[in-house]
Amino acid sequence: LRPPCVPPIIATSVKASPLREKRLRKAGAQVIRLRSRRKGLLDLRSLLRHLAQLGIRSLMVEGGARVITDFLTLQLVDQMVVTIAPVVVGGMNAVTHLVPVRHSGVRSRLMHVQYHSFAGDLVVYADLERR
Image (tube, rainbow, N blue to C red; front, side, top):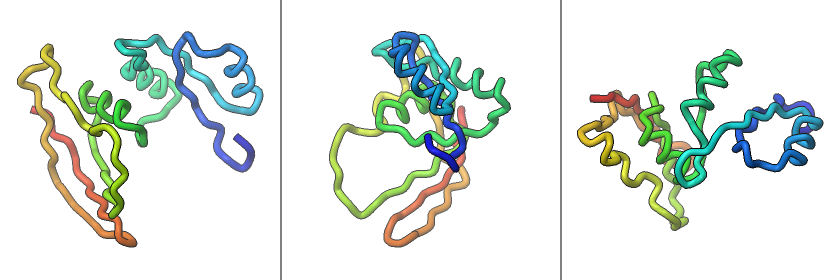
């Protein structure tokens, strides 16, 4: 949060600490409070509407397994860039149960797939096509 960074936009739940929000705002951050959905996940559609109102039309999501899976499950992804490093990290599966029962039959396909190698990492680029 210290200059010369661009002031961040931090999305959090309505239940988050008001004291922390006050500290973040004082440090220059913009805080967006959102209602939570199942399992405490933020309402991502609402987040994207808020960001659009701020003029943000493109978003890079660099999240953990739950965040990435939530964006994919809700079909809020237009493009994917996946970096595969030659290191075994472990942890939970990054993409699980992408098609909940209520959306059965909805699938995404990777289109226009490209890949490049950078310093030993494999980077895959693709657009998502929804059926």
